[in-house]
Image (cartoon, rainbow, N blue to C red):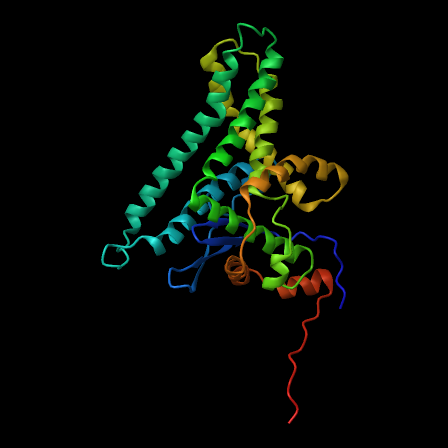
Length: 318
């Protein structure tokens, strides 16, 4: 039967990992990984995040901060799981797991990543723009230049890491993740053929979220009028949770609406996604489908929102 093509919000989201994809639906998530032997391994678990059940995680402009932290923690956990399939000793045997050590290492790596990101995307743009103070006395213009530098540094960073072979494959799995979600939200049965012909761009992508973080930071930092350089940097860092909270609400709105204003607002982030997503092959689409089906009943979803009717298999007459 013909299906309506209006998009419906599904609530599922995901992340590309090493040779695989994580898909999350509410508190349930699944990581599907293409093993070195060609098979697909799927791990399913629950992730309640920090402060499970707290009403703080339901308050607009506050919930985004918790969501961001939860995403970092879960993302690192899923990356470690996918990497474990390719961490082999010289004799071809997998290394024995040390769960306590892995958790400590994962926490340290996550903290280091956050500090590094703050240094590159918050402190560095401020420092570079401050070099122009001698020739530019307009503080408002300097704030805008700082924001533009922040976006340019991010684009250069994305382009730079895309030169790495492993990152290029990660971007292809990222594309497969988006294609799966778009396939479902457009009302198409989740098959490899339908996934491959779906768009690799999605308005709820983390890349778009980061772009909104940069834009919101330009607006907020525009109004900071503190002369002391250390205080200016400190305020910028202190405001990042606020920036993340506002950006989360914008990306949440973008994922649930398709009016002209939202499309215009989402266009720059969608453009950057062309760099962070690449076209996957069919085997990558199979991995993405395995991750979705482990946490999401797409057939029930299509029946509810699109009137989908599963075709009965043909039987041979005796």
